[in-house]
Image 1 (cartoon, rainbow, N blue to C red):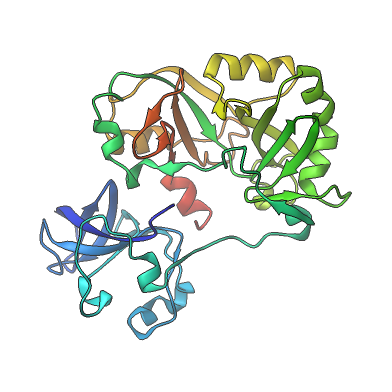
Image 2 (image 1 turned 45 degrees about the vertical axis):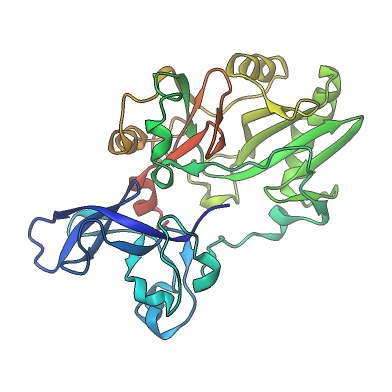
Length: 334
């Protein structure tokens, strides 16, 4: 579960050119702007990540013009992602433990963009437990992943993270199913996920493979996230294939080969030779900052990095993480 609000240390402070009252702080792998003198290096704070929705309480009233939402902003030329509060907002009697999740204690919730009817659909049930949900952790929140000796030197592939809506299509013991990010959906002519399933003939393609599989991808195009890529029709781009019987993702080579055999497109593959550990977080953020391979007029949302051969990670579960492009977040108000 994502820690939207947690107790973290201020690991560095740096001046901002031309700014007398603010400075740059580093928390985990994030850079943010704080009031000058409010914190010292080594101090603990309550750090709230971007996408946090703060409760409507007096101590957060200054966020009302932003509808209490924490977004990526730029102040005096410095990108700021997240917000640091003094520990006093926790109240009395709270034990201060670095890394402790205080999301529920404070009443923070996650911002979710409005979902149109054709994207949500009629619910059949919860997301199937025999398939991993589609989600990626931002590397800034788990910087230790890059430092772990067992991860150093792993050869990885990098894909573009495209901005759409996540969808899962599965065939399990003869049953075909269609899911949004969090729910399984009933067949409906109005539902976007089912429209794509039929457009790509996914049920027949999965039956032809003859295995219990789930394919996971991003749907982009008209009516989705303002159609930043200016596409004229709904488009599915795969980023995962899951072997349901093993509850395991396919390795890169098998994933790409099977997608090709089914006549399906993957998300843009940017590199197949990236060695994990050659860049720090700042370098990875710079790597993410580019235009999209789908449409060069749009900013790339970010990148996803995974080893060519699937590997575990004690913190992430699966060694896989995303780096979101700050230029994308600033451009599109995220």
